[in-house]
Image (tube, rainbow, N blue to C red; front, side, top):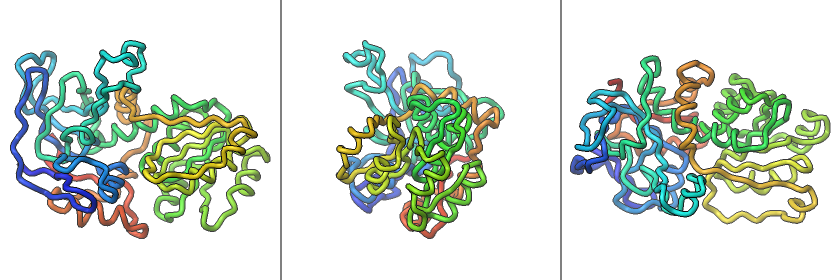
Length: 341
C-alpha cells in the first residue's frame, strides 16, 4: 500500500509499505481522507517525528477488517478515531487525568498514522460517524475536538471577551466554539488576508492584523479598556506567546493550543503583576463525540476551512509546500485516499 513516510526534516516520501497486520483488539481502516495538521508541518520543518513514521492523525475511513477479539463493529462501518490513547494504568490515569497519561500514545505521532491507504488502531479508539457526516467532513473531527477541548478547559464564561491569535484551522474552529460558549466578542488576530477574511465570515467581532494594527489600542477599544478575559494562542509562531502577556486583562487567562517548538522569552514580571493564568491542553480525546455531534447538527462550519483537496502522491508539492508559503491561501488541506465510503 502507499503511505506518506516521514524521513526527516524537509523530507516526506510517498512509499510502498506493507499493509498493517492486526492484533486481536485492533481494526484495519481503509482511510478516506486525512488532513495535514500544524504539528505535521512543524515536524516537516524541524524533524521532530521519528524517521520511518507514517504521519497523519486527522482522518476518517471505513472498517476493512476486524481483529479476532473486536466486538460491536462491522466491516464498512464509517469511523473516525480518538488519536490520543491513554494507557489506563499509570498514576494520572488512575486519578482520572487521562490526558496526562504517562504513556500516552498518539496515532501519526508516536506510531503509524492515517496518511496511508490503510491504517490500524485499537478498537477502543473508534467513534462512529452518523449518516449525515461525510468522510470528508469527518476528517475535521479531530481538529474540532482540539478546539472544543481547549474552550471547555478554559475559563471562558458567557459574556466574556476573547482574543484568538492565529486563524489557521484550530483558530477558526476555536473562534466558532468560543462563540457557541457565549463569548460577547470573539476577536481574531491574523496576518494572512485569506484566513482573516474567513474569520470575519465565521463571525469574528473584529479581525486585527498585528503587522498593521496596534493590538493593545485596538483591544482596549473593543473591550471597554480592559482587554480580553481569555486569549487563545492558536499558532506555532513565537511572537504571539510574547505579546499575549501584555494584551490580556488583569486576572485573565492565556490558553495555549498552538505548538511552538522554539524557546520563547517571557515577561514573567507582567504575568505576576497582572495575576495571569497560563494553561495549555493536549488533543481532545474526550471531546470527539461532541465534535461529531457539532458537525452533524451544523453548529460548526467545517467545509469552509477546506481550501485544498489533493492526492497522496502530491502531499509535499501540493500539501506541505503551500502550507509553508504565507501567500498560498491554504487553510486546511485534505489528502484524499479512498474518498467516500
